[in-house]
Image (cartoon, rainbow, N blue to C red; front, side, top):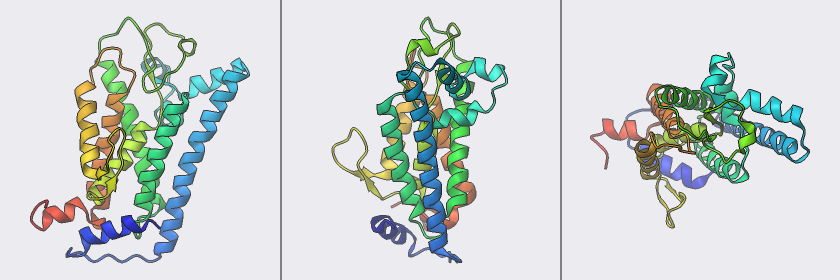
Length: 262
């Protein structure tokens, strides 16, 4: 387990009036680690399939991956509801893939190290954040005026992957990352993390709030290549998930009940 995370967790919950009983912390830790590895592996498989299709010019595989992972209003109207989930496990660009996987592993590791957190909670948080991010993105696109260009946001995807005029599509695990980071920031607000592009570690809560502010500022940016609405959707779900299911683990909620943030 991550000893720094455990120390931070104990520091922020040692004076809480709540008492928690965990039947098997080791089992919970292992199940959470299994979910973490499964999330990373699923993203890696989809990324590898897309890269293989590109370099081998396998049009059939490329079309299959594109048709079943790109999230867009045309895809939703065509009945491809599953892209709400599959788009959160798809990456085309190596930098986008690597950044999201490192961030996802880091936040999942922090939550996995919390005694009794468990894989079921982590899986629900991850999937819910992905779907919420996709939903926010579609909602924002449905209320956004069409642009002349039609970039695929959240990744530098080549133009040939677009078939419909003015189609804006999204993909990537950023919604999941934002949701998991929001929950981690609520439970472990003082955990110091090195967050790109800052040169020094900062408290996790400050980094999450900062990213949320940037996304909110640029949400209606014309021709954006980042799904800011998807990020905010994931963050909103992570916060709601904490308030609904994770307050027993302390963190911000316990601090507020003890008399405010300090």
